Image 1 (cartoon, helix red, strand yellow):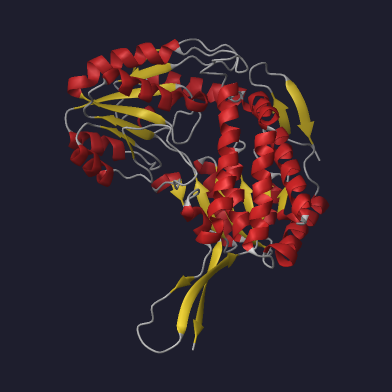
Image 2 (spheres, one colour):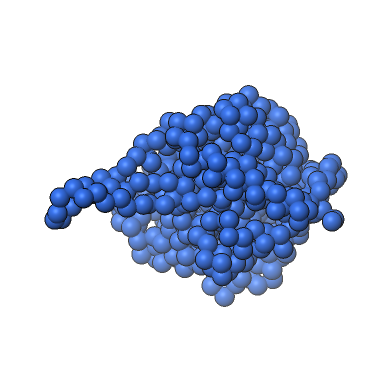
Length: 460
């Protein structure tokens, strides 16, 4: 079987390694291994045994942070210091569930309205889960799915993005070593280099109990259709076109820097990056001038070099897509305040203005260093514009008025609102969206509520 799993360095275009796609027989073995690990270990052992495994996974991420980070740079072009930060965050997520998992799984008593005896909710794993992961955060995305769900008592089949096989294999080795160190079976976490057709087979398998996918709307819709057809629980973390709303500030330079940071993180390839900058008219001209200056100062450079803020886009396909979108926006009448000429996958920052609802750019997600600026005359107009999108993942509100901040937060259709803060993700904070950005939550306590059986036990 021809494999589509390959490491292609986006900085050079060189194919560094290829990995074979799993055979159908091997896929059945993988499902069987995960199912056997659930029945024979995960559902039988106390939570302390499962957290011991995840504790070792966290330690190994920390011990191998340099190796893991360099893999991410090779696979998808993330600047090295950001890749190191991602590995550290993944380790912190695993450790969070080590520290808190038992409390989250504790029996929850129910006050009876009448009758004697007691009642409580006991949480337990459902069984085998499938995770379909994206390329943009190869370690963090896996951690926020696998960490809480293994602690909860599930076992994992993990299909990583085709361009991330080296990081996928490195994660699998970590889980294998961690499992061996605590006497757990290898089937608690199984990496599968599977094709889309094979994934359909996995979802249909009666041994599978749930699916989590992080990716595009198209991928999410396809997986959700298969999951629904087979009556499987699904969590969807999809795209975003997050608004950054600036209504007032006592430090415009700091607000501009935050806006730039929120757009450039991960080479602009983050679902919850700020992408639409909605600025009150009294601040718009000053903000636009400063934003263009600071944003375009970050020109793409070698992702392995110290201090690089912007590396290459993840692939030739990503570059072609962003070029096409930018060209279409220009053709349809958007003003281009700044842009440059891509060199290979190195894509210079671009800034759009005068985008109207008649243009494709008004509702599309730009997955790269392209920002769109909008001028508004009131809080109400800002909220209306922020909500006029098919997405509803994150949002950012900058204002010196505390009452206004909470009023706007209440009015925004999004799963997350950050007030006077960007890049504040943390293991304890739930992540997820509404509308076409998906459903369900990862991280925080809520991550452990998605794939558990909340079993009622009533005692006379």
